[in-house]
Length: 251
Ligand SMILES: Nc1ncnc2c1ncn2[C@@H]1O[C@H](COP(=O)(O)OP(=O)(O)OP(=O)(O)O)[C@@H](O)[C@H]1O
Image (cartoon, rainbow, N blue to C red; front, side, top):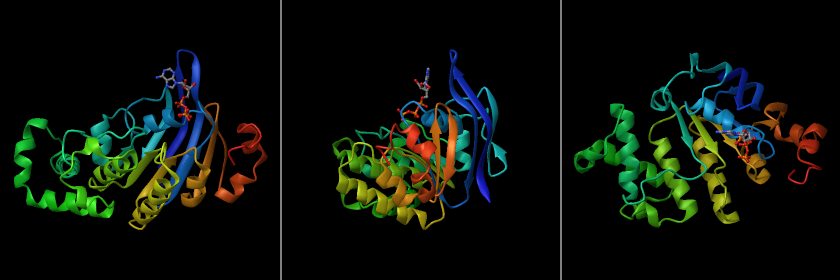
């Protein structure tokens, strides 16, 4: 059963067709990778799932509900969370506060920064946030300022900030970009562990080691359209895909 269904999505920017009749079905509980060369339209497509962009035409259905014409926080409330290319954290706050804020927002539908002094008294939210930090391996650093973390740890923190909202669909935009090989492998292990909770994941990724380690299914985009789809093995041997990558250097 598919949890996300995209049909006939088009999006142009001043005459440039960034998305051209995109169709996509993402199966419940699976890791679905979207790959393709620079400028293929991957981030534009993801932006259409989270209310950052509206397609010109087409439909995006999540678990029977349209994601179009909704504000980002409404989509979040429906159970869709996104990890960004550059982690969106609060650098001057502690790790624990960083995770407590989205936990609050999830429970109450909003969070205002002037509520911050009150959050210490919220034992239940504090426990939940601490548990998430434990899951991503950052509990020992709970009192540190988030701005002081390494790039890899910032991404772990952002993952904890997403997971505490109990998403049903997690969108990961290049989750290992700029990481060392060791951090990349730790992130792959972490994402595999998260997979055990049955959360559906869409991963945009350039690193084929990550794609082939995690994905059940791969969609390949080029010039705004999906040119191939299949298991990682099927994609690896697909001549159209090799061609899109100019000789298959990435594969
Ligand atoms: N806000 C925008 N305004 C104008 N053009 C845009 C905008 N966003 C994206 N584009 C263009 O749309 C096309 C698709 O871009 P997009 O960022 O979605 O590609 P991508 O596959 O995510 O690339 P990358 O792998 O480099 O991140 C590109 O030609 C890009 O320049």
